Image: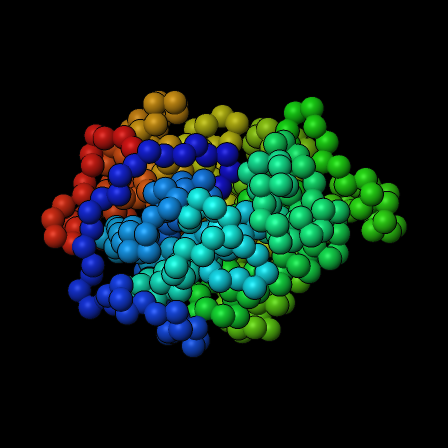
Length: 428
């Protein structure tokens, strides 16, 4: 998700839930035969993100053996069950790569340490099977346009699409991105994502907050040639860029529906569409980033027009934060989603709990739990998703345990065979 530091965490020792598939049963074909009966819906959305880029949540480091990688992944799923969650959002395409044997893009370097090296197993297949065995829904999380977290094309595999089509790529802010303004790029990234959608029994398709990249001071995203060639009748480049992302959203939803009718497609945007000072339709906030103007993502329109099945705004601020108050943003999003048929869930900043670099509010174990009560006051809000999985496991200052106790009908079990280690008072 947006600009969040890596954690340092040893995974808790969690056992396998009774009746779950053993690791040896996780063959490469069983998760490909179609979707199971709906899972996790009765309790509402109680989700967590499993981030793989830069090994934020999983795997703990590149180069693990297949058995070690499976064990760590299963531990995260067990933790979700112990925290009474219903859904995991598993990042399977972090940087124009894949955590499954993709015919379009190379194996992710976050698996083996070397982009393109076969890890010897299929993480997406195992994740789907093991999630379903535990009654969890699994949404495949894709990043559409990020190519690399560095700006050196020579570090990509020789057959990487970005090297075969250098004209598709824009270096910006020390990273590489596909250019959203090129129609061939838009088609290609959809093909790459659709392969996983069509092949695996996933329960949803999920994007995060990266479209055009977050602004970098003193730099311009160089899409002059694309604008000249494909800008058409657009006089304003910002309008053209938003049009490009609108097309990506609409076309991908159509592809998902064509491949698997009923499979939900959702996005987790930065929570501020526009500030009220910029646009009277915007939220009463003063955030430094506005998705409409800075990321060229017109997230409000996507919801109002019903181009999404669900939206998970990242409301990563505490109640009373002057520039972007949690309650203010939840109310704004509830109003946006009202009557649209688009499900609304709220993204929660678990990663801030207990972080000494954060404001004093985040040192209170109740800060994460407290905002869920105003969510209950908005019938449009169908649940919450926590960033991120490693913090769900480590439970900084007991914040996640407090959520479970206050809102999820009982407390999490104490450490023991098959249980999550309770790490109250410890930071990751």
